[in-house]
Length: 317
Image 1: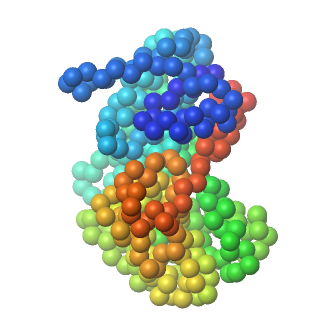
Image 2 (image 1 turned 90 degrees about the horizontal axis):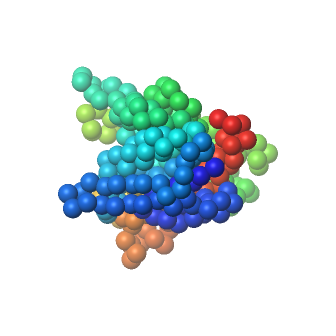
Image 3 (image 1 turned 180 degrees about the vertical axis):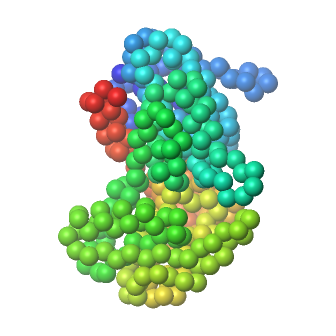
C-alpha cells in the first residue's frame, strides 16, 4: 500500500498516515511560470494499491479546478506506471452541490467529475458527507465509499444527555442526513432523540421559508446538522426559527466549513451557541481575531477515513 498526500494543508495527511501506521509516499510537485504544474511519484507504484489524499476545496493558492486537475493528472500517472488500483481519498469533493437538473440546460457537475476521474483510471472514491449520497453513487461506476460525518460530532451531543435532545435539518434536502444521526444517537444513548426540520425553498437563487419548524423543539437542545457551511445564511435563519419555536440551545454542525463572505460574522448570531465542523476543510477564512473563533469547534474525521482504508485493504477492493 502507498499513501500519497497532495493536500496543501499537511496536518490531515500526517494524522491519516499515523492512524494507518504508514509513511506518506514522496512525490515531486513543480509549478511552471504559466500556472501549469507537474506531479511525479517518487515511489514506484508498480502493482501497488495506491491511495491519493486530496481535498478539493479552494484555498488562497489553488482553486477547486486546480486541485481537480492535479488529482486527475496524478491518478493517470500512477495508472500509467502500473498501479494495481488507485483510490482517491477526498475529504471534500468539489462540484457535489449540482447533482441534478433543476432548470433548463443545467449542468450536472457531480456526474462530469465522475466521468473525468473514471476516464483516467480511478478505481475507488472515498469521500466525506457528499451533498447527495444517492446522486454520487449514481454518478460513479467505480466503487464509492461515502462516509457520514455525524459520528465525528457525537461528543457534541454528550453535554445534552440529561436534557431533551433534538437533531434538526435546516432544509428538506437534509432530512435523511439528520435522521441517520438521530437514530445513531438513540442507539448510543439508549434514550429518545427528537427530530425537526425547517422549511426552506430555493427558486433561481432566491431562498425563502425558514418560518415553519416541523417537530417539537421547545425546551430542547438542538443539534442542527448540514453537509457544509458556505455563507452561513441557511444555518442562521434555521437557528432563529428554532429559537423562536422555543429551543433551549442550538449547536450547528457541518462536515465542511467553507465560510465564504461574511460567514464568520453571521454565525456569531445570538441564536447560535456553537459551530462545529470537521477538519475536511481547514477554517482558513475565519480570521484569527474573529468572534467566531471563540465558538468554533473542529473535530477530526481522520479516524473514519483510516477505518475506511483499512476495510478496503481487508476486502481487497
